Amino acid sequence: MLPLEAFPAQVTENIRYGDTDRQGHVNNAVYATYFESGRVDLLHDSLPLLEASGCQFVIARLIVDYLREMHWPGTPVIGTGVLALGRSSATLRQAVFQDGICTAIAENVIVLMDMKTRRATELPEMIRSDFERLKLAAGS
Image (cartoon, one colour):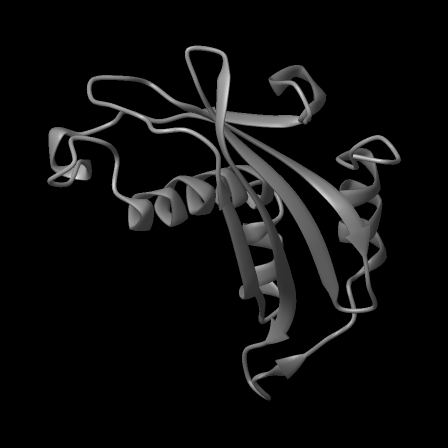
């Protein structure tokens, strides 16, 4: 399991009371929103440039492992890093931490899509080099 410091991109969220369910813990579906916040934070600098070029990232896959409960109130931190790069995609590893304890991990694949053709398109060299800078250490 990776510590929070291993993730090159980090964002903090607030647990809302409405994020909890009948069991009193954060509902499993809310984690997908936390992971989205982490992805958007990682991509934020690249998004305006990509949108200007007629491309956007879409999520193609999300796998979540729930490790511990989270409770309200709290301010979880979402860590995000790049695991691997494909021709038109990036595989991300993410983790949610509350009070320094990892509560869930995710692996997801994002694909660069041409907005006109609605098809995958090759990652531009500029994005590829940004993703290389945000890669997690080997064996992560």
